[in-house]
Length: 259
Image 1 (tube, rainbow, N blue to C red):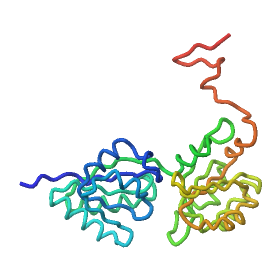
Image 2 (image 1 turned 120 degrees about the vertical axis):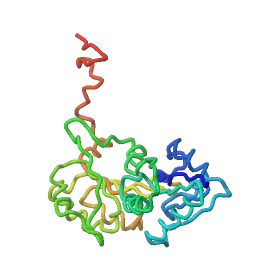
Image 3 (image 1 turned 180 degrees about the vertical axis):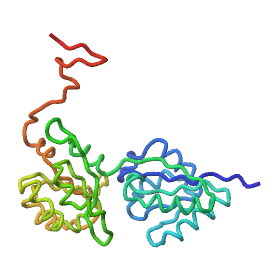
Image 4 (image 1 turned 90 degrees about the vertical axis):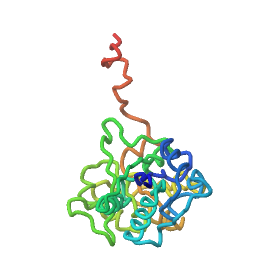
């Protein structure tokens, strides 16, 4: 009887091959069939797979074709890996693939990855949550050809004043700025992070008032995050309030307060 293994979905991380998890790297090293998300996955990440593994670029494939290949490889007893960019929990179409596999009685497992928001914040040496500035991070995208729920449009989300990280939307930057300007104000800092952790990564810092011409001049139209919010101002302004976690006058279960 053919031994069958679950289909394993892996988050490849943002691009740097060392920003994949150890567990993800180990699974890739055992892959016999690897379906990966086209140019969104760095060739350097694919190098963790064995050279003899069957590699399938899924960029030209429809959902049913992808699942058919996963199904066939699983039933042939292969170690099958489905490799997504970033983290599988964000904008990955994971759920619809798993639903079709479950319909066929095929088990799956998921190994998370580092999302581009985390990699961008690290590259910027930037905390996205700051005491009395921003305690909430919203990961979202602008409405384009795919709609968003009405209560999640950018104007509504902007009302929270949180740190916004907007995926898949740099080509809609004019619309993004227009929808955020009233709530955040024109001087709110913005960072457009292009191909984070890839060798050609770029970061454009500006404000809502003048980010558009800078991004146009750079020719960035895809593969970029937009980060917006007052927390980003600490790169040039002095931090006004520190957390109480390391405040010597603040007691907690592991430390007494100093007199």
